[in-house]
Length: 488
Ligand SMILES: Cc1cc2nc3c(=O)[nH]c(=O)nc-3n(C[C@H](O)[C@H](O)[C@H](O)COP(=O)(O)OP(=O)(O)OC[C@H]3O[C@@H](n4cnc5c(N)ncnc54)[C@H](O)[C@@H]3O)c2cc1C
Ligand code: SF4
Image (cartoon, rainbow, N blue to C red; front, side, top):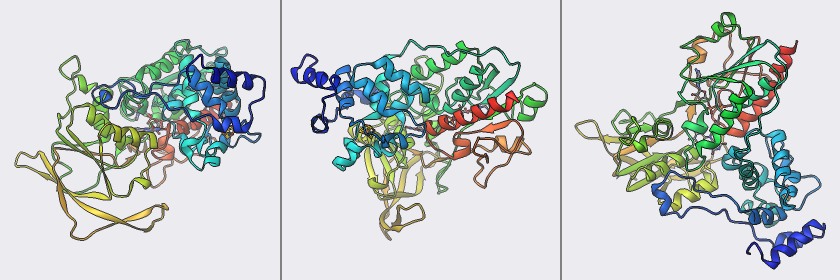
């Protein structure tokens, strides 16, 4: 359909007259996301998904049945009024759509891009259920992104209440920390964000690559915080530069939010992991994203391995990001080595699809046994085993069972381990009185309050490695509780 297409105009007229029937809506094809050409994008960091046009957005929104009970909302961790914002887009009222979304989500341009909608709102969508295919659900995330992008650049600065004289410290500037900073500042408190890195934004800046989430989007949100009067202090490691106790007892902070994420990479604990050429995905992505190692020698100071054959170990979003980054850094062959089948992969379907399009080779039902090195201590290969799937384990996924005698060697010079992250123990080691569970995550109550008076926590440091939207949701709960605590 073209913009002027008669068919489109008829649909719009019917929509506006309230005459669009379910059968008309079912007949509208799911709108494909325009994307950069797969071959061309292998050598560029710029964003792959290009976003809907206004006509596509309205067509996609017209596929929504406007269900009375809106089951999609139940699947949204922050309960965005999805039915209403989608209807606003269908009617061409784009500004209204973003206003509705922003009631519940502070970072819609981020969430529209990175939320796993297929296991949240879109999993529950009646349209997807009718077609028995989640890919046929209304593309709520893409519509959220569309509305958010249209309001880009007009970063309205939320009103701030008169000063209360109370001081809030936010540790970590990831999505949870950003939400807490905004919500507590809005209530009139003096807010300082302490960030260990030289740039704020958390995983959204150092982990998720530019080709999936442009950094300018995160920066815009950080700028809004600064305009609201939030102080952002970088290169400040709480637990090293100052402890939480010092912040509260000596520096006068009345309440603290801990949003330090889960930044400690897990390793396989196999022979050869010490070799030169083995990276954790965190290190690899931080070098490439935050330190811009892809421009080493052209204005960036941080180097990264120039690899020919790369193995990425894992099957989640982090593994996909690392594999796709390796493609962009010029590797000839990138193997994604995963010990279960593709069906069990935790990565988002879209990321798997994009990785394949870009030439990442999926080696499923395989796992490394040891990494092989040369006399100089550099990676020269990886010995792997093939696997079958057995009975489901405690996670409900079928357990991989090694096939005896199936060893083979993969010819690689770089190995990137992307099998998950744990909590960094620094806060635990330096904060007596703060309760942690056996995995090193902070224990909180329903209001995200910790065992320490005036100290709250949320996001990955509480949940374990989770998602942006869950971190934001916890940030919102914590900020409300902190505002209440400070008002006492
Ligand atoms: C590569 C990658 C890809 C991902 N892709 C997705 C995705 O597609 N969709 C999705 O929803 N989620 C994704 N995630 C997960 C998501 O990014 C996280 O769940 C989310 O960012 C957690 O937010 P947070 O607020 O807990 O803090 P984080 O984003 O983890 O940020 C914590 C911040 O605290 C800082 N910090 C740590 N210790 C200290 C200290 N002692 N003092 C001061 N500052 C400190 C860190 O430097 C960091 O900036 C991905 C994660 C990674 C690593
Ligand atoms: S479940 Fe799907 S069809 Fe129903 S209101 Fe939500 S988005 Fe629309």
